[in-house]
Image (tube, rainbow, N blue to C red):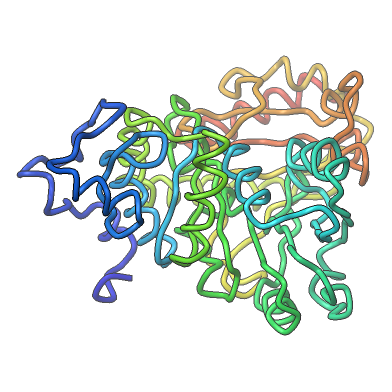
Length: 383
């Protein structure tokens, strides 16, 4: 962190190279010219970093990338047009046919589909493991190219001890990658725990306003150069200047928003524990694993059989029904709908999830208003 400043200060600081502007300007240009033949030649030889084409570089995007690198305490970052563009581009930058990938169970469903529909037919061997195996079985890393992680995992939110995983991987030369979208850099900084590459669906907490689809990867200069020069350039999943501008705006308030998400989540976790119709709550809290310092606003819980989940979902007023999360608004996603998804394989179907599971994204509305809405819907839907 710059000069040991608190993350909230780093994210809110005005950058000095904007000509006095409080925010980085939107440079809406596809290409950039050179002053001389020699300048162009140096760029093509890789002897300069001058911006020349927005598919690879753009000043507005670079401002966002720089701030993300600071937030995650990485050396560099690269932005993408979506979280899946970030995930797929990062995996393909380091994989070749014959390589092995170990992936945590209950991974994000589209990441699971990428593993099964693209990587496996491409000739990559993919194996799935529960968190405790990734933490404790050092032998699985022998000859392993990539360990792909989420902490916590999607929907059921099982956390990982990233320090243990990183230690095993380092001994075997395995590259570790993690989707850190749930915790955000406010509550977890995996690079400081020994993880090699951090990936975000920036559409979620980084944006925070449900108006941007984007992704970002943070790592060492070497890894980011590999991703930028190879998969970003050739797959073309670049981040647009306007979206980068919106993401920088989102980062300014990330710390404050995460504090409110956490406060509301704490209220729900405490009160859900006292409700007899709730069997299990999935919401890891601070210090449950090393390096996790807070509780995000995305959680799930299981009802018992006395609750009609369809009626409960439809009875909610302040929780909209939707598949994304991380924005200002509160959302509900009932697992039975995901489990019944036609002609699709996903990690919930593969590794199992209770049909009584409901996922909540707790937004920035008043916590007591949200809780009153929950109680009202529960009363209307209990058999």
